[in-house]
Each structure stands twice: as structure tokens, then as C-alpha cells.
Image 1 (cartoon, rainbow, N blue to C red):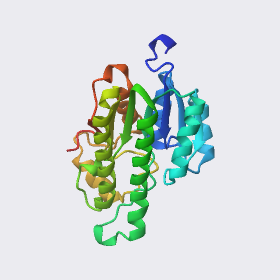
Image 2: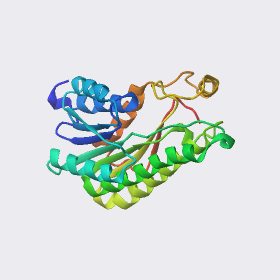
Image 3: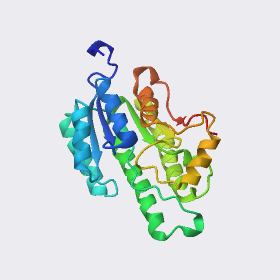
Length: 245
């Protein structure tokens, strides 16, 4: 792909949770389209360096999205590195998906997930302050937010809140021509897939395409929303899930 066919050439993007799984695929897809990408990782520096080597034009920053100080510091670093021009923000990181029946969810479990929800809110707040006019903001939700499956109540609730944050922000930023959307993946083959086998088998049985998704397939849905042609698409939840309703 030459530079003339790279539709994101010269755009600056931030991706949270870019060292593995769907986030890694998003970083690779953005750089393939010519974007300069800063992505975050929590602990695995080795995996982050592998992504940097695979996605030319990317750089990693260690960051914990559960800390407001680290969130604020992240945007300061990104602004400095990109000389104040931030065009795309993709919020993929989420601390933990705990899938248990409601009666088994402890306060610790609840807090572990909803601390991630809080982090997304303040990441969105920072994105709203820093993304340039005409830019794109995308949050990564989950099929659990729209599909009331067994053992998914607390996790689905945490992700549902993120969807509300995102759609409200779309209304608030419309006058700046910033498109704000959600991508909600279905069950996807990643190392973060922690659902018990019987739950995964049940979900696959409900998917018209009859299989789990691939990280690249979710990343492709995200990339579509970053394209110039998607400038009129905002306040939407795009479900990349093989047809699961």
C-alpha cells in the first residue's frame, strides 16, 4: 500500500490497551493506513515492544486506566508527542471481565469492573478536551451490553454505562464535527476470553455465522469508523458480532 492509498496518512491516534488482542489488531490496522499511533499497555512491556516492532509508526506508553492521575498524565504525554494534534482516540482497555452469576459477584469483583467504567469516563473527558475538530472517538464495548446472557449481568452493566457515556458525548461534540461511536464486539478469540467453555459454546450456537470472531475483524470495524468517509456516522453502536441479536 503506497502513501497515496493510506487514508489516515498523517493522522495522530491514541489507542488504550494496544499490546494484545483486539487492541493490538487496531494498532496494526491504523499504522497500515498511515496513522501515527501511541498505544498504552498496563504491565506486559515485552508484548508492547513486539507491537511497536510490528506496527511501524507506533509507540507504547505504560498506563493504568484506573488512576485519574495516570489518565491525565497520559494525555499530557500524547499532546507533547503529537505537538497538540490528536485526531483519533480509541478506548479499548478494560481492566477485567468477570463473568459470574449475580449471587456470586463480590464487592471486590464489582469494583474491579466498575473502576474500569470510571476510567473510561475520564478518558472520554480528556479525549473531549484534546481531540481536534473533525476527529474521531471510539469506545470498545461488548456484546454483553446488549445481550442478557448468563453470568454477564455485572460485566454487561459496566459496558452498558460506557455506551451511555459515549453516545451522550457524541451529542456534546457534534458542533465540533467530532464523530463519537461505539464498537461492540461479539465473542472474539483473544487471550482475554475468560468465559467458561459451556458459555462460549452456547454463545457460538446463537451466532448466525456459527463461529467466534477474530480480533482483525473487530479492528476492521473500528477502522471503518476512522475513515474520512465515515464523517457523518456518529452516536452509533456498531455490533461486530456475526449477526448475534
